[in-house]
Image (cartoon, rainbow, N blue to C red):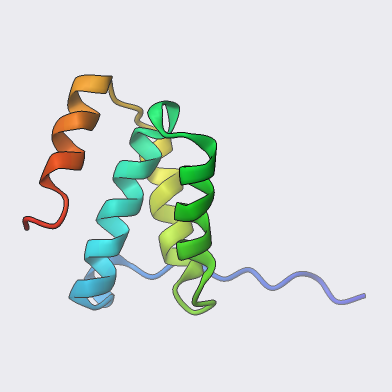
Length: 85
């Protein structure tokens, strides 16, 4: 049996602006995952896995965010600013 292939996520500097914006959203989802309903979190994961080429980058951004959780006030403010950048 062949060993698994390890795919490294892309660096923020090498991805397109729309993908970077989606990555920012995924990072907010990771930081606020304690306050997001499980079904909604499943939706974020489905979006992250929709394109196999982008999956490592987007999943890594969720993971990066989950390593630095935030409080509810920060999450509410961050969610309100989504799409305004």
